[in-house]
Image (cartoon, rainbow, N blue to C red; front, side, top):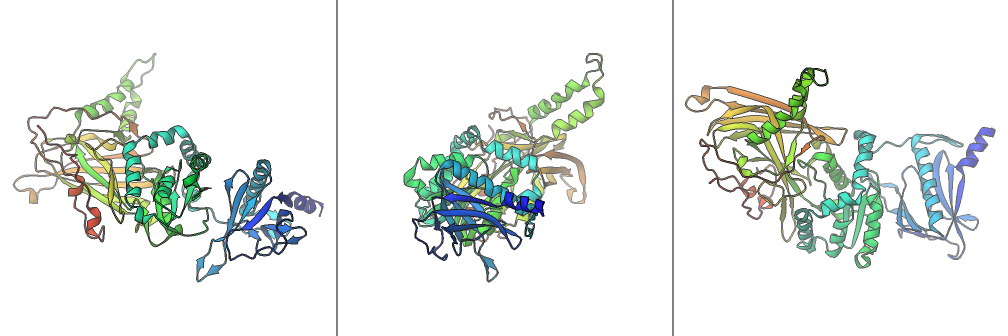
Length: 540
């Protein structure tokens, strides 16, 4: 009994507040005069941890918050908003129940937030509270599929201004987003916008410039505090932007969004697995037939020949061929080191003339794809070589479409186009293939997601018999490799001029707009129209 009383005393906690106001008009207004002091009280009722508000000696009706489903967000140094799930109606949950809380000073605000998190954590973990056991809440989808150590490093990285600056100074990226938003004001004016993974808040500010009614900038890293500061420094826009610190898989919003905006693309489009969070945000927050910026993503792939790159990677392992390194024979590890270097995808900018066949593409429609579809991406490969050469691997890049009502706009990372911070990516085979002009190259690229917020890549390329009698022929050569997209080799050199082998014939590479998309990929063929880019210069 004594232990129970001690626990109850520890858990009961009350705070004095400057004021409390309803967030939704569906809540009852307090009957007591607004001049009377308010108090917030954490307690346990019917085995459930809850937060209640009272004025003088009476608790305010309609202001009881279930801590298992509640979220607390800072609106300013001394102002916060507490949002919790409403009742189920027609099997659809309402998340519009909430209150705004005004504190007397920043210290009391900080103390209250700490207490809120402690009570919420204990309610989720299922601690034995005085009035019974709190029901254990499920972990979010993000927590279930991501290692805590990976998530910690990820949010730490994006919580630093120097990395945000690196992305902001990618003027192809930032300028294309700005143009996509401003040129399509009709999609933003008077609309509710959710910025998924807002970072510095730059896209939220763009949306506000385009006339958004209100923007909810959701950011899970410490960058949320910098975003608040940046937005507060632009008051004419900031008054229509609310920064919410938390994961899109966990936070609750007071209203649905008419349009989502985000920059969820990683290396090879899918790295960091933020596309899944983008899709989850769509399912949780977007109104039916709402818009998504970006709307569609495409991964482009083509075989390449680059003798210099192949030799560079192979030579890295020569260190392990030393037989007398301070009296130690290192050669037993040479084979493992050789395979290890070839297991790293190469991230750099390369000359598009290194491609030996027109590219093919894999389309991901963000408005329709399911989260589970991104757990494993399986892409069959088929090319016809344009030249006779050695094939050293598969080159990949991506582009995304902002399908605006006024001006559809593309952001591309293609070789030959202006370089972005994504560069391009190449999977290098440790055993090259020999092909002739007109020879068919087949294979498969499988990308399997793992808990470190990235993918394991399995690439197989094969050269088939060519010329007369090819119909009766089979595979001549096959080469495979396994790569970890999480651990690339950041070469990132600028494209260099390469000499043309005598047996190579001039050929025109396909521009992005020339790549054919099947009707099954997109219902409206006009979505795929984009400006012509001269990214495939002819060989001289």
